Image (cartoon, rainbow, N blue to C red):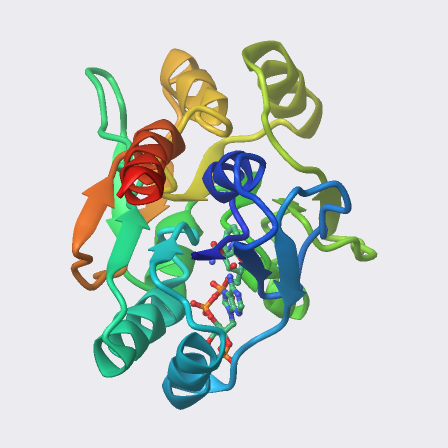
Amino acid sequence: MLLLGGTGDALIIARHLDGADVYSLAGLGRVPADLPCALRVGGFGGVAGLADYLRAEGIGLMIDATHPYAAQMSHHARDACSRADVPLWAVRRPPWHPRARDDWREASDWREIVEQVAPFRRPLWTMGREPLAHLDEIPESQFWTVRCLDPQEGNARATIIDARGPFDLAGERALFDAMRIDVVTSKNSGGRATEAKLAVARERGLPVVMLARPTLPEADREFDDAAHALDAWRELTSSSSTT
Ligand code: NAP
């Protein structure tokens, strides 16, 4: 089995695999050193490269457990599995939904996010590394707090916080206080690890500018979380070992 990862869900599955299975990472983040399965790091070279890999390694199943915003990889996975005739499963983490008193404002790209954030002074950016490419464009009226996984220097108008979730309510409240946050930007990642910021925005009546989810291709089987995918994987491997 080939597991496409780079998420907490994928890591949960990877910890239950064995030496015949492969955990694949793009190589942008932390690479675990203590997995029971094989590990490969780096891209495959597009759909053709991935399809070649599936055939050359005799892969019998692919599980796409990449992040919901890693849409290119999910589309490559679908196309390569179709070409190589390999079944595709996917962990598709459900999105968060706004609750009563939430003030969410949807944006479909960077330009729309910047427009939505323009009236505010102290945005908290929690949507990955994209804001880092715009640190020279920060309006004079704003001071940015950017939390992402890329350690980098800030500047006079921005603080970069290099931190990895999970984040709890107390820590998020302290961050909002310390940085005097008045608006939050986020991907709609879903899951528990990073949702505390939404609760803090709710209790303070602050808006959240939410980047819309990309459209993902259909998989042959889809699971809400790692536990359900693991159950199905165990069922499959136990039935094939008894036949
Ligand atoms: P992407 O735009 O969908 O993919 C870009 C390219 O990176 C792919 O075409 C592929 O290169 C390579 N790649 C991506 N995931 C890979 C994997 N698991 N194994 C091997 N190659 C992979 O991806 P992204 O949004 O940059 O995300 C990169 C990684 O970070 C993914 O593993 C994702 O799960 C993780 N991540 C992403 C986010 C996010 O917000 N986007 C958040 C948390 C974690 P080739 O075409 O050469 O095969």
